[in-house]
Length: 319
Ligand SMILES: [Zn+2]
Ligand SMILES: [Zn+2]
Image (tube, rainbow, N blue to C red; front, top):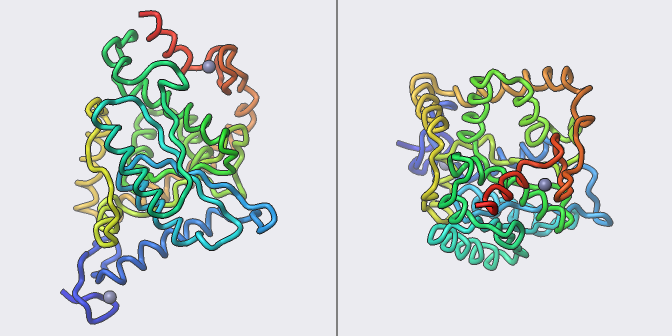
């Protein structure tokens, strides 16, 4: 099959757009969508040569963050308005995380990007191997780890004086989260997800935390993997040994089936979700930041007296 745009052989067919693309046109198409996202989200707006923005990229060593780092580096390396720094979280999962940290180091070294590692054990005095072994609250590992990771990403981004925090979430990740949030029946959850990491910057209303951004969220997971393959970007392909998010697994399967039968489903989930969240967000506006206070143990912003991270850390240390 020939490329829709030139005489070369196509390496991919994307049913949602009806295009067959050769490797050159595929690479262009991915990069164009990321540039478009950066522009429509207003990410560079307000940054100048005299006061450049610090963009911290959460780098796990997996394909998504490796591709994001490459694309942002290629786009912005010579742009004096933006400085890139990579941040890796070490959860303390022996085997799995050691290897992915090595890959992250190679990636950032090869691009000449500064790289900082923050670990659960340095910051919280515990690691995931210990959490899983003790499991004081009888939860799955991801429930602890998600809370710890969010907290440490904020802390690390703060320490690095970040203006924005970038993660490599792709279209599949985001449409799964959107669908799961709908199914939870909790509209405030939808507005939180939207305000914290999806809303274009001119309309961001959440100002207490370092704003997050996901420039790959228009790119399907398969295309992120293909981009890494075509550009020969090394990444770590292992699965976390503790991962057990069975609900996400079910939703993932469902959405992929829908996408097969109705190409474009993931894009339309996100389009509808974002419009709905914009409306819901202005409805919830009044009681948003007023309920935030500082955790009495660690100072993190939380809606409780003691933040969830401190509750978990203390439970583990009490065993
Ligand atoms: Zn072509
Ligand atoms: Zn706390």
